[in-house]
Length: 236
Image (cartoon, rainbow, N blue to C red; front, side):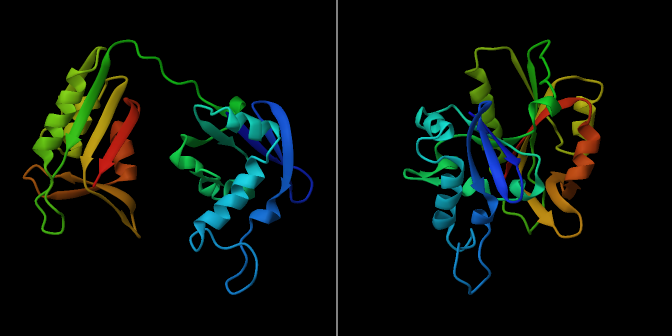
């Protein structure tokens, strides 16, 4: 199911479901009240109450969008180019059965004319795994060997051609060596991650001698750009 939200005049929003007009709603109905004032609760204060309003805006009973949801779609794709509409936490949408994100894959996407076609694999899948457990007292010890063993067991049960390679040592330089001048690599990280006010998100990789090397998201992308089409993270 693809839900497209388009701003009309003023605060009115038009809802299109799978290319068919469904209904409209007033975006003001999704704006929480100021603290201490009557009205819609902030999402974090009462996620269920906020979620019910978001759900009603997207899937009123009897509309094409509502009927499409009743048919139990494989996923829900939400599309909008309006910044105000996009800023609304639609993931709180709460149906009579609970939060929609707990029932369906709930995604946000670009309009069809701005989407990039997914890459086509020309050979078997090649996974570069990065099991990282730096020597640092600030980090809890991880069962890296157990994680690596479980990943190997999963790959053995896959019927398609898959190559699994371990980045050892788990340094950013070694990861770069394994993906440089290659195509269609999948990088799978297992380890600690974090968020820093100054540098943003980072992954806890290792230096050559095993100590912590906090690699920022920007640095990581710069090393694997052009070679990797999917990065999966399993930060602890």
